[in-house]
Image (cartoon, rainbow, N blue to C red; front, side):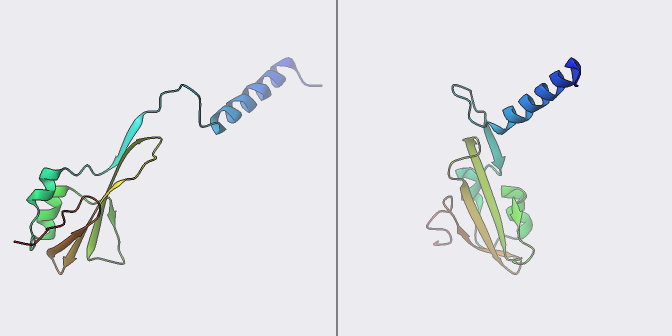
Length: 115
C-alpha cells in the first residue's frame, strides 16, 4: 500500500510532465524570441562586391551558419515570431577566394554589383 505522500508526489510528477507537453494555452502571451543575426537595410547597403571576408564580417557580424563543406558561402538567418514560427529573413553571402561576389535571399538587393 502506498503512503499518501508517495501518491501525492506521483500525482504532482504526472501533472508536471503532462503540463509540459501541452504547448498551446489559450489566451497565453507567447514571447517573440529573436534568433539569429539582425540584418538591417543600412548594413546591406554597406556591402560591395570585392570586399574581403573580414570586411563582410565587420559589417554583418559572424554568420549564423558557416558550412564547413562549402567554404564559399555564409548564411545569415533571422526570425522574430512568437513560438519560433513564421518565415525567417535570409541572406546568403557568396565568396570567390577571399572576395565577396554575390548575395542571395529575401534580404538581398536585386541590383547588387550593378554599378
